[in-house]
Each structure stands twice: as C-alpha cells, then as structure tokens.
Image 1: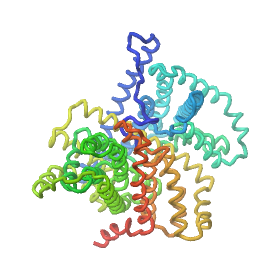
Image 2 (image 1 turned 45 degrees about the vertical axis):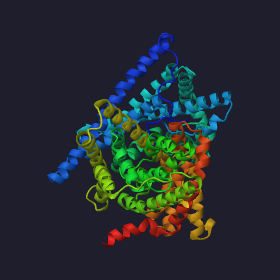
Image 3 (image 1 turned 90 degrees about the vertical axis):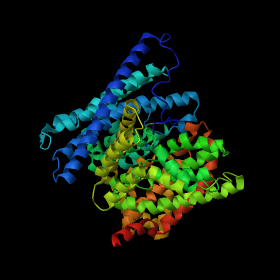
Image 4 (image 1 turned 60 degrees about the horizontal axis):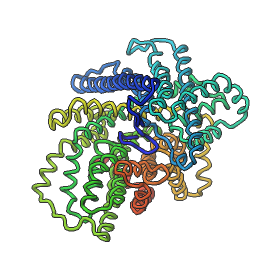
Amino acid sequence: MPSDVELRGVRSGPAGNTASDAQIDAKTRVARAILRTLDTVIGAVAVAALVALVCIVFVNVVGRYGFGRSLMWSLEAARWLFIAIIMLGVPLAHRLRMHLKLSVLVDMLPAPGRLAAELLANVIVAWTTILLLFGGLTLIQTMGGVNVSLGLPQWARVIPVPIACGLALVYMALQGLDEGRNPFMGIVSIALAALFYMFGQDVLSGLLQGVNPAGLMALAFAAAMLIGTPVAFAMLFSAFLANLAGGMLPDAAVVQNLVNGASKFLMLAIPFFILAGALMNAGGLTTKLIDFAYALVGHMRGGLAQVNVVSSGLYAGISGSSYSDAALGAKLLVPQMVRHGYSKPFACAVTAASATLPNVIPPSIALLLVAAAGNISVGALWIAGIVPGLLMAGFLMALIWGISVRRGYGAGAARVGWALRGRAFLTAAPVLSLALLIIVGIRFGVVTPTEAGVLAVVYAFFLGTVVYRAWGVKSLYESVRTAAVEAALVGFLIGAASPFAFVLIAEQVPQTFARVLPEVAGNLLLTLILINIILLIFGLVLDIGAAILILTPLLLPSMVALGIDPVHFGIIVVVNLMLGGLTPPVGMLAFITSNVTGTPVHLVFRNILPFLGALLVALGLITALPGISLGLGRLIDAL
C-alpha cells in the first residue's frame, strides 16, 4: 500500500505548479481555489470519520471486556464509516496521484504515445466512475428497509459511492487546470466517457455477445494496466466490460459487490494498523527501534546494514506495511550508511530488501488480505509468518556480512555493552510491547484482529502524547489524514476485487485451475514450482494487494485439493509477491528508496540482485518445508 512519499509513476503531488499566482490566468486560480476548498473539506471529513471509527470500536472493546456489554450498533456503524472513508479517499487519491498504477511501460513511449495512453487511461477511469455513480444511484433507489442496529435507511450505506464519484469527476476536470499540464485532459476524458456511456455501450454490448466474459475481463484488465490505468479502476473497468459480454452483473450489482467486499469486519483492521504505524512514524517512536537494533547488531561486519534488517523486523511488529518501512529506512538509515562509507545504491538495496519483512512478520496487512481472500484464520497466518520472516532476515544478514567483508563495509565498530543494550531495550520496550499485545491477543482468541488494531492505535496515541510527547496537533492531523487516504486506497482495491472475483467464480475459472493444474504439473513438487513461477510473474507487474486478491481465490482450491495447508500456501503467496517489490518493472520498494534518496533506480535494481537471490533461496526452503511456516503454530497449540 502506498506510503506518503512521492513514488515515480504513482504519486507526483497535488500540484506541479511552477507559475506564481500573479502569472496564472483566472480559470486556473478558480480551479485551484475550488480544489483547495475540496481538499480541506474532504480531508477533514475523512479524518473525522477515521477518528469516529477508532472511537466506536475502542469503546465497544472497553465495554465488552471491561463491563461485559457491547454496543449492539457498533459493528454496523464501523462498517458504514469505513465505506465512507474508502469513498472519500478516492477523490483525494486523484488529487495526490496516489492511485497505484503501472506506468513504467508508458514512460518508454514517445511523447505522442504517452499522451494517447494517458488520455485513454483517463477515459477508462472516467467511464468507470460514471458507471459507479449511476450504479450507486440505481442501487439506492432499489434498496428498501431500515437497518435495525442504526435505525437508518439501508440506502444510507451506499450514498457515499455516488457522492464520492461526483467529487472524483470534479477533481479530474479541474486538476489539469491546477497543474498546468494538459489542462483540458480531464474535461475531454469525462466528455468522451459520458458520450460512450450514453451512446456507445449498447453497440459494444451487441458486438461482445458470445465472447467469453472471463477471457475478455482478463484481456481488458491487462490492457488497461499496460496503458497506466490505476489498478483498482482497471479491475472495475474489466468487470464492467465482462458484464457487457455476459450480462451477469448489472452496474448496481457491481456497486453492491464493491460495498460488501470492502466493508467486511475483518477489513477494519487495515485502517487501524496503517494509522498505528503512521502515529509511530510521526512521533519518531520508530527511532527507538532503530536505536535498539543498533545496540544489538551495530558492532557486526556491515553493522549499519545489519541494523537496517533488524530494525525492519522490529518495525514489522507495529506496522505491517512494507512501503512505509522502505520510506522510513530510506529517510533515516540510508543517509547514515552513506556517511559511514556504504555506497548509496547498496544502502538503498539493503533498505528495499529488508522492507519485505513487515508484510511477512505479523501484524502483516498482506496476510490480512490473504485471510480475507481465502477465508483463512488471521491468527494462524500471523503466527505462521514469524519463522519465515526470521529466516528471510537471517539470509539477508548473512549476505550482508559476506558483501561487507569483500567491500570493507562496517569494519571495526565497537561492541555495545550489555548495560547500554539494556537501556536501549527499556527505551524501546513500550513500542515493542505493542507487537506482543497484537500477536498474543489474536492467537489466543482474546481479541479479534480489528480489536487488536484499534488497541494498537490507542496505544500508539498514548505513547506519542503521554510517554514520549512526540508530536504537535498539526503533525498528528496530517498523520491521520494520510492514514485515512492510504486505508481508503487499500479498501477501494479490496472492493474493486469483489466483482472481479465474482466473474471469475461465475465462469468456473478457479474450479478449472483446481482440475487442470495438477494434471499439467504431474506431481506435488512440480505443482509447487509452477505455482511459485506464476506468483513471481504476477509479482513483477502487479501491486501485492491486487495480486493477492486476484490469485488467492484462483489458486487456493488447487492447493487444498493437493493437500497443501492453506496457511502454508498463504505464506508462499506473500513471500513470492513481496519479491516483486524488488524487481522491475514495478519494483515499488526499489522505486521508493530511489525516489526518497535521489538514487538512479537502475543502480538500486543492480545492487538488489544478490539480495533477491538470497530471498529466493529462503522462498525455496519455505515452499519445500511446510514446518517452517506451520511448526510454531503447532507448538503453541500443543502447549
């Protein structure tokens, strides 16, 4: 999930403004004034909704465990609020250019080709947004009844969809004027999409009759991705297009699938863990973990690089976001490594490789997505991620030692005494205890993942305001606002995957995979090798969240039919797809470190190669030896 750093091809900031207010014309000033007002209002509402979500779930937890009474309406209120946050985040993500997309191939085109691809991608986004808007209005008109828990009409849950889509179209229309680059691109895109919506859909539907919906959806998704359409919109676009061919999912049903898929109670844990990590970062609390990591391994050969890996493992216990860890490491650790003689590309490579750990070691957001997509226990997946994560860290540290010996990195650092290590541990202990609270609480059934997430937020807020007094009101507000947008993007992606998965299931694609895959491979080992290859290929071109939501329901039935434990398979999925963050053309972890530090990305990729090899060896062991993933959970169950 995207962090609040600038990513090439993903986020370029709300304004590419180079002209002063005195130099711009009236229409640009008006566009900027409108967008600033919308930014302020929508951002404030999103912050209020996220704070309300935290408060409702926390009060329910206190009531449940402290007084033996729960708020009967809290679950429904939380789900409705999350839908509002998700939809509010869509126009804000347009403004900040935070929607995940594959732009590397488009960047290789000549200028006219890039312009044509951008226009077509914008038309797809506008058409999809128009379909969601009118599909949402249709759904509102057909929904009846009152929600018993909240006493509100059922249609109120869906109303954020058309409102947000309308705002998103306003942003698309005005953003070009604001930035001064292709100022009328958004307006032209919306006009073309509206014309197609009114006059072209029936013609296209007639042409597509008899075409296989699943095949069409796959081709449309791939084509939309290649021209730089944001991932979530590419999924929705291809699902809408499949509906024109097969007529299986009307527009209103797509909206209903999106809302239902994004508002599962388990998914509420995602904004909470994103917010907890944001609060930790904003307050500088994660530096306590880095100091502790330095006390532990700073004396080793390649000490600062070793600290990078260990601090990522420690950070994993409070965040679950690899992108956030990569941004943090690039800001804090890469400059220190360079000052101590490490090459900048090597420092970036270490940071990117170690950032794979937070999505394997719990509380992992990626494993949460696997749990939701495959109906697998979150607690079992999180426990299963601990040993594989430590194994990956061990391989990275061994490789760092070897490279450092050869290049002369980090020689001669003094070993920190046990007294200083003890003090560093005590300083970091309040932060480290959060990971223990989460893992133990979930594994032993004391709290749900969502409840653990809200406790993590409250605990991080307490540490930052009372224990460390680490932030001001402005930084706190910005952290919550950024977390709301990031959580919205994840939630929107989850919602977009629901109609996509519906078409796959309706067309019997997972069932076909379950039948054909073992026949093609011939035996279990070859099947596992083939699965790993498929996952690695998808990881090359897809964000991990989208890949999980597409591939888990597609491949899991095959694995279960072959006798592979779903928890073991979930770990294989996440480790495979995380490696895609280190490889072109997407390589999000590499791009984050490159952009934050100003290092040419091709040098980062070149230095990543040895680390990729080490992680592939770890992946092979994790795949071949299920006990690495399942052993700790079995041991805990036996105690």
